[in-house]
Image 1 (cartoon, helix red, strand yellow):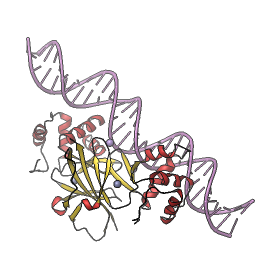
Image 2 (cartoon, rainbow over the protein chains, first blue to last red):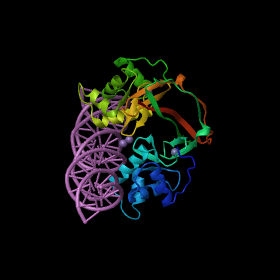
Image 3 (cartoon, rainbow over the protein chains, first blue to last red):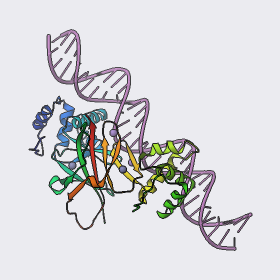
Length: 140
Length: 140
DNA sequence: CTATTAATTAGACGAAGTCTATTTACGTAT
DNA sequence: ATACGTAAATAGACTTCGTCTAATTAATAG
Ligand SMILES: [Mn+2]
Ligand SMILES: [Mn+2]
Ligand SMILES: [Zn+2]
Ligand SMILES: [Zn+2]
């Protein structure tokens, strides 16, 4: 797990990050990485596609492939809180989420602010991937 | 909040349940309610549509409208864990979820088995709707 | 350079869900 | 019971997000 999580990342830093995570650094992947690692944020695939296509073109298929690959390799985290789209989270540190169901906004909650003091015992053949805590809220 | 949560529910019980939650008990709504309240379970809209259309027909629009209405009135709970579909949960008691990301299975975790001992302080103009804990696991 | 493999692409396709315009059912008054 | 006004249901077009396929292009090794 990457703990030094600096933002923004230069192009060169993105390249080393990809290599670290065993991802061949192609043009398109570097560009997508540069967008999402510019700051800790939550972006949908559509948003990434739009951002990346401000300058030259990356295909929809490649954006989806790349985000899926990044997630598989642990470079981004998929956040499933909105029934209509997946958010890709560039914040690699352990944290939880605050979701405004009225506006669709998604905010991080530092993991120190949430403490889970008891979890169920699970059969030994089961691996825990993640324990997600989502606080669903709305304004007034 | 309904605490006596008995399953299965007879047709007559479904009718009173709908009335309790200020839902006009139409044929279609009773039928959908009868299906989902037959036991504590998690069903997608497509599954409800299929189940309900074993005998006579209820339209897709009505199934979606009805499940949305039930959720809005607090008769079912929407569970968002799978990026491809919403689950409607007929278990009204407070509980959390175990999600098998490899198979898509969803299981309940009784709320006694999870203890959250610290939550962040939130601005006073924010209402908490729910605190969801999702344990994402996979087998071996 | 050549061969092999990996990655990208356009656009067709699919699944889940929404919307619109019309029809049907329901509730109330006469 | 009939008429009227509102609520609910319906078919099917449509949208959005995401996947797949078949063809092209780029990277890598020899
Ligand atoms: Mn949705
Ligand atoms: Mn998906
Ligand atoms: Zn986050
Ligand atoms: Zn449940």
